[in-house]
Image (cartoon, rainbow, N blue to C red; front, side, top):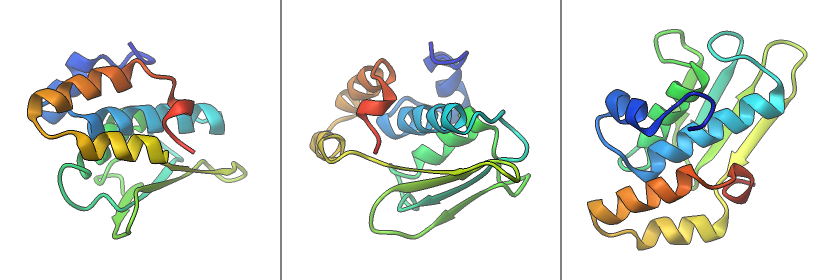
Length: 134
């Protein structure tokens, strides 16, 4: 379990388990830790390169882990060639930018079936986020 977010809860929120959902959760939790920021208010998230499925599933993981939502207007998605996530805390906080490591991108590209995706998602969930993002 990662800071109270179980895979069961993530699946209930998103509808199924996949690697991009888990990556969104881990990225959000890592950013909150680095910013020393609480979830929900004061945080702004900008996601690039995740407009289409399955990459867009990352956004649900980010909403779940950070509390940033489209309803509050503190998360936005933009077009981009690669996934890049910018996090900004309340006034006076630093900005954190996360990108996927090259080895992770290669693993994601090799995933062919739904079963493979679920297995990779479970593996990622138990991986140190510092090994996944730069």
